[in-house]
Amino acid sequence: MNSLIPTLHDQSLDVRPGRTSRVGSQIPDVELVELIDAKVVRLRSEDLFRGRRVALFALPGAFTPTCSSEHVPGYVRMLSHLQEAGVAEVICLSVNDPYVMEAWQRAENAQGLRFIADPYGEFTAAMGMLVDNRDASLGKRSWRYSMLVDNGVVEAMFIERDVPGDPFEVSGAETMMKHLRPEYENPRPAFMLARHGCPHCARAKQLLKDRGIPFEAVHLSDEFSMQGVKAASGAATVPQVFIDGVLIGGADQLAQYFSSH
Image 1: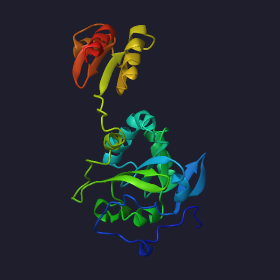
Image 2: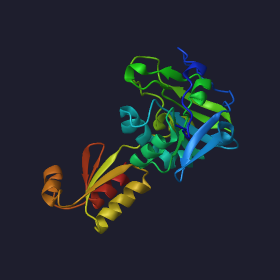
Image 3: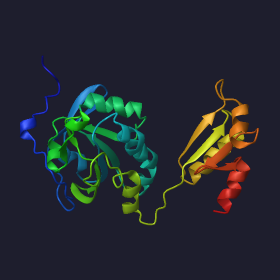
Image 4: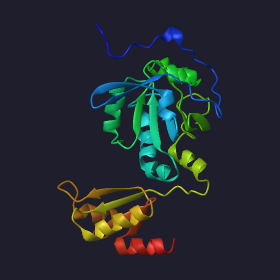
């Protein structure tokens, strides 16, 4: 049976025991693949990075635990901050086929990022980041790392420690942002109990957005009532805003909190 994507030729790929930084080196020029409007588009990595500053993070595999729960969400949350710091595009790269990468992007609601497949593992091998993950039933995949590339040259690279398991300490979006803006302080996450159409809730959301604070909102519904709001916050009104696990209160209390912080 013919396939749109050739199979991975294991014998041609070099699985290296050590992973070293390639800062100052030119990006390898190999073929990568992207699924756009249900069509397979082949592109050269050299073209992907030419003439601009790009942040790329690579990971073991689509839909895997750390990749889905922390790595991708972190870059989605920090995308606007990275762009303000001069990053033209943020790319998620994995040794997967483009169909899986596109499905994963939709599942993560990560439309702001660009999901690129390295189906043959050639880019990953050329970067010295190909590892054998057969113990995790993944086969040959990418080690977890991130890098900032300026006009095809690696400006900075953050490689996870070579220890057992799936370390995730330095390749996240916060580290990338700290490199770009050393004075940057990671915003503390916020959570809001709200109601659709509530002007006070809209005001609280705008206050959080103006401060660049990432937040999630749970709105009143058949499954979540004012009783739940009162149980969680002690108040029978919305919004109720929590920052870093601490109850702040409604929109007025949130504005007062910001005026003193």
